[in-house]
Amino acid sequence: MTLTIAVVGAARVGKTLFCINFAEYLGARSLSYIECGSAGEGRGTLSPAAAREMMVHRGRRSGAVVRTFTVHLSPRQTWRRIALIDTASLVEKKPLTRAARTALLLTLQAIHSAAAVLQLVDLSCHDPARREFDDAVWRHLADYCREQGKLFLTAGSKADLYDGSLQAPFASTEKMVFISSLTRAGFPRLQRCLLGAVGPSAQEMK
Amino acid sequence: MYLLSRQPPEPFDSHLWRKIERGELGTLEALQRMGGLRREGRQSDSAAAAALWELKQLVGLSEVKQVVEEIKAYIEIGAQRAAHHLKCEQLVWHMIFSGNPGTGKTTVARLLGKLFKGLGLLERGHLVEVERADLVGEYIGHTAQKTREQIQKAMGGVLFVDEAYSLGRGGEKDFGKEAIDVLVKAMEDHRHEFILILAGYRREMAAFLRLNPGLSSRFPIQIDFPDYSVVELLEIAEMMAQQRHYSLSPEARRRLQRYLAERKGDLNFSNARLVRNILEKSIRRQAVRLSKKERLTREELITIEEADLAVEER
Image (cartoon, rainbow over all chains, first blue to last red; front, side, top):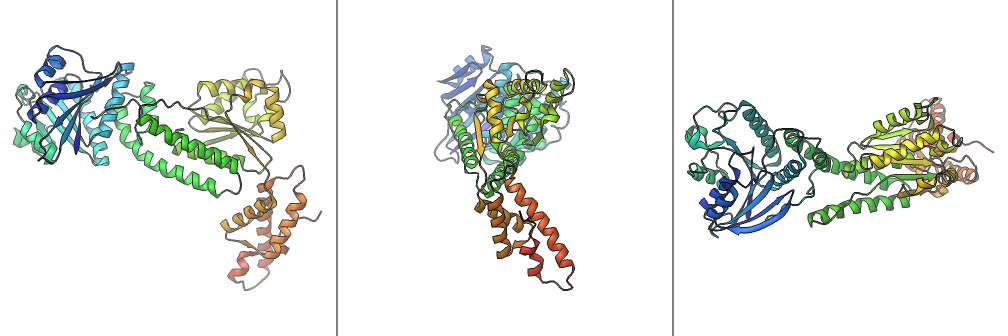
């Protein structure tokens, strides 16, 4: 059985780093990936370190690409495989460019196909416009997932940089998980939430 | 491995997909509409099934039913091809309906609108029924304006031009020609946004298409609505009566059959419309007859007798 999780969020929220590090955390020694964007499709297999180097540190822009990482789990676990879909960045500005439109369609398709949707929110960002955008995305995704019976989780990323100033509605939701892809803080809780569908509490995380 | 395709996955809403592709929606609008449109999508499935069922209930019209089956099959196979990353081009669905009055052209057009909406080909699926007077203006420039207004009303649905051949009357100087030009341009420019159906009597439509040689090829679907046979008309009469909680007595049925057989060759024979008019008039006559009685049984209230039948002796 494959559990498909769509990881969504605005640009530079840390989706790619989260996918690579979470896959590694789940036990992946090599990452099979397939990517799809306006330029076409590509696939390959990399070690997590090489993937970080290529997809994150070298600054190769992956904002308009939807990339699926497949993680094979131990046969004893409920889920044999996990597909982590690193979706294209959700872009606030309008009108969207041609590449952004293709990326949005692929992202919506990923959300539609996934059993669980994980929205990442940058905890270190203080831009009110970005917070408002994240909030609107959160409301629409929550509505959609509730109607479709999908698991929907919000994770506050870059928790290592968090200064405690997060505003509503995220702070008020008990479903939010605080994580840091860099330090891997919050990953155990997130794993339980995603794979065991156990709701955490923001209070507990703090 | 999980692979994403570039086509709208079934049952992903194709209208939403196209709107995003055209750049009409931003990220938030797309996310907001994703849930709502999928709810509509489920309703659309049942709307398509209802329209198909209604179409199947219509007497005769085997050619129409076959074309609709083809359209439905094409769309379903298209969705499967998309899943296999095969090309699936959208076809053009503009049509010409030719046939005598009362053969079901408007009824079928209305059902097609509902069906196409259900199948995701049209956004609204409504029918805008127009005739020459609605399209042709009285002074230069007026026709283009009137025609465009009607096209605008029909966006997302079906524009049904009844007695379309009348647009070709009057020669080159007539404003009808201008209306045709505007329609032709719109059917090319907005080929997937509305469906244009030109309808009219068989002979007149054939002459109209001969006079406008480029027109015929722009309508890939041309359906002929044949006259109903007497047996089919009787079936229609019984169905109409049943829908209104009436029934024809055996004598009334035989009388109606004789009358329809006699009238069938008439130039102005209006098929199902004639049957409907006879039935409605007969219902009124039955009411007058029954109103003179004091006590009425359920059977009497239902039955239309031969004496009630509104058919005139020739």
